[in-house]
Amino acid sequence: MTLKTNTEIKNFLKSTSSIILGVDEVGRGCIAGPVCAGVVIFRPESKSNLSRYVDSKTISEANREILALEIQSEHHCALGWSTVEEVDELNIRQASLLAMRRAVETLHLNQKMIPAQCLVLVDGRDTIPNLVSFHQRSVIKGDQYVRQISAASIVAKVARDKLMKEFALKHTEYGFENHKGYGTEQHRNAIKKYGITSLHRKTFGGVKEYI
Image 1: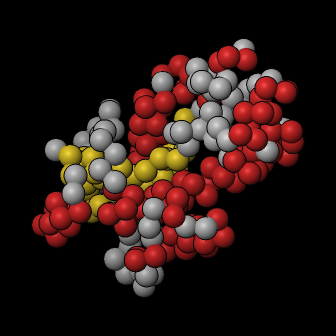
Image 2: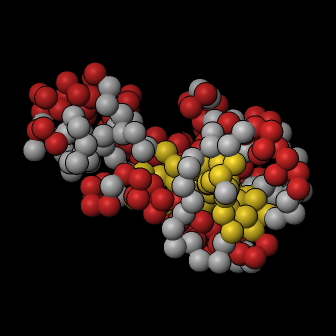
Image 3: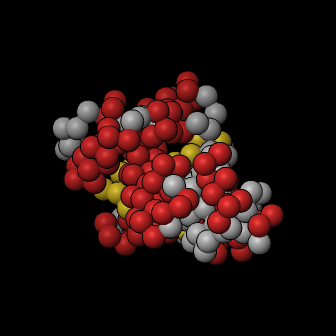
């Protein structure tokens, strides 16, 4: 069952006694770079202000970095990645779900969670394939309505942005530090001028034309 409305989501969260794992991915719409997924469980003893955890796209870069450090120190979280090669081989949807599964499995391994006590809430319309023993629900606009998903989007975006800035030091002409791999005018013009790199998704429009 997919949770679709704010009211539906609020009622469901009030009714469940499960430990909530919020999962989200970052980088799905890029034409370069890997996909990163985050998963977060809130520690009940934490004194952090959860209302500050909102969709990462609506927060400034400086504030995202501050919040990501807080989430990592105050709560349980983990990251999962899918490579550019996996994006091209599997397609972006399946690669995103794979990154999500890796994030949840990493957290499971690190925290020794009991799956029967947990509920994975996944941003979007899909649940995660091959995630053994975990109950799941997909949540439309989950990064806006579920704080755990919002927190997951924050840690994933900060981690991915940091990686893209590191790539920018090697590929200085592409401006990865500015657009993080999205298909901006600056990025597309650089591809036209310099060609593609191993970071570019060869099955994506704006890239495959230059192979």
